[in-house]
Image 1 (cartoon, one colour):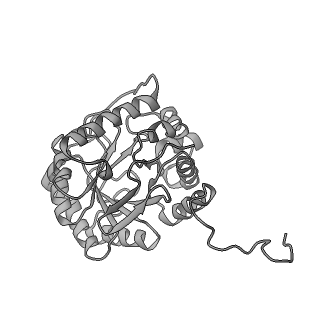
Image 2 (cartoon, one colour; image 1 turned 180 degrees about the horizontal axis):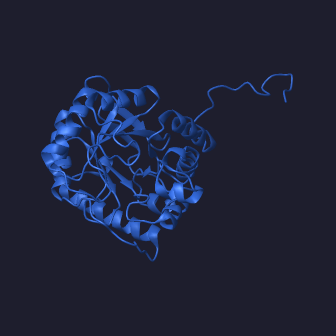
Image 3 (cartoon, helix red, strand yellow; image 1 turned 90 degrees about the vertical axis):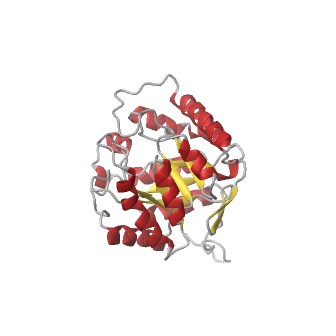
Length: 298
């Protein structure tokens, strides 16, 4: 039995969700020349917007727009990051009511993104900038709190944990408290254990297996697994050949309580998630025909 969610019914922008009854699919659109997965395919503004709209057509509930990779590297100025993400937010908001999040750890980027139409800020550094929580609190936006241990864009060699699930849960609980103290209420918070972020493959596998430890926090849990290195190392597959492993990992997390999955391949993930919802009893089949008549079928 999974722990109950606090405030499972959420209104995010113009869309409403009941996370006790459904799983949201978040599509990744990174407008960076050195993106982890697409290697800059969405760097041009028109390509980023087109990719986002294609994801919406494929069934995405949520678009996550990023302008800076998590991986170690040279810092990007706030103005440069805004130049990458804010035009995408503005263009997408003018064409869709989809939930738009911006993946940033800078308070000023968050502020400008929210003004442009973003309704969620996805902070992969767990509030490394304490002002970011206050920016979210002063708006109607929601906040995703992600576990990571390194300072933004810095190396973190050989991460070690005594109990990775418990330590990640406790870190996230402390960040939830920081967000509360800044004025962000429970019904605008999400948590993400941060698969592969300052973790090795064994850590990410254990987090997947023991995700119920994270969901004990009672907040909707987001997982970002898509095409990550732990999947590649388990299956010995390059980035472009990790779809099946990504789907298996996403379904495992949904069965263990995840309620948002962040992905590259939207259409395939939507089908996998809808099937997982039906297995959990959260969704009725689209049709009932097989062996439902007087004549038995094979």
